[in-house]
Length: 259
Length: 274
Image (cartoon, rainbow over all chains, first blue to last red; front, top):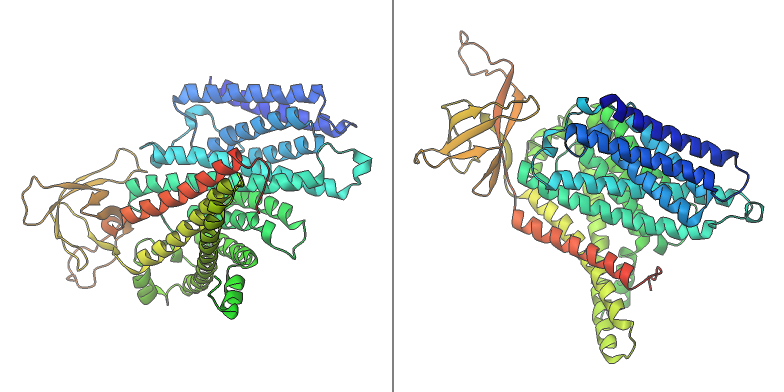
């Protein structure tokens, strides 16, 4: 069961990659039924792997690495499926898969379920585990914001008439701001819930450690980003650039943890 | 706002500008990210980590020379946060005046959208106002209250410290089953009934007590023939925190954010910031 669960996870990632490759070789700018079917299959296999992981450990798979790999990837996979069905925009689908593969690389290699070790602070109470799950949701939203930013930048580089884009760069620009606002909202909720949990368990909402410092940094970046709408004098490329920087910052936290 | 002099109005508008907030938030974002890297990489030793064991004012007075990079970082961050607080305060002041004017005009108007727009402005005001309270709260907790790493914990020992509100006797130390979890220690206040006990890590009379593993430091006052301290030792950590005020501020912040997002989603389908 252990190996089956992990194999299914790697199979789902392979299917996402195959879907990405299919879209790259496709000449049309819409997401056709074949790549869409591949991506939906990947999501189904991924869901199965999460269920198996949860069954083996008899809990939500939430140790450090499986959180990054299983839960957040699944969230991005759901966004990918939804966006692909709704907009059928090839470039946007590709950028979401790109974000997904970045999350996969940061969580590589995936542990076997039986080797997972839940951190002590996630074993007690409800507030801290809940805050972690809400934080995972915010990461999914920020990953979507990153995808929109990359797609927006990419679409601006090519002539609109050549590509016949489904979603224009202008409409993507509005969506980036919306996404950043929702991401910041969910992120703030996760920090509020987490701070209450930390308060009851450790007597303080704040600790000087890399995790909290990175969280403040990310919060400040996105808070500044949503106010960019009212700031004159900056290029329109700044908003997508910040969308990319924010997600890279979140990925960078994984590197900082390994230092 | 009409009674305010034009010069002050200009200053207020400059202070409350979104451009200033944007610039400050970007600089602070980089500032905190660099701190996270320094914290982990150990460029400044464990300078940042020592901030967890001491009150900020105590740390600045006693330890700033040992960790000069952290001290410089704190100084710059303090200035930036002060300017940001001014920015948000100015913004809140302007928003409050706009709300008052809008409320008067909305009451006299037959426009159906006036009320939802008023509520949205009110929620934005609440978000900014509670953010100010957060910064203010953090500033107050940094300069008041107690936070210190106290004496070594040993079974049967009476713990004394100038900042401890009560002297405490250690009754029992219960080691944890896993290495990652801290041991639990049972205390009783000195000169009290044995039935009056409390466990740490935990709260007791408004103060949070914790157990910290530290490396034993040599006791220079001990006799020469006495065995020196070695290895890890448990030390008492105490921290006073105003939970009620903090909870109130956070609930305000959450309410503002939540109501704003719901109103935005339910009432304003398209982005409308006017």
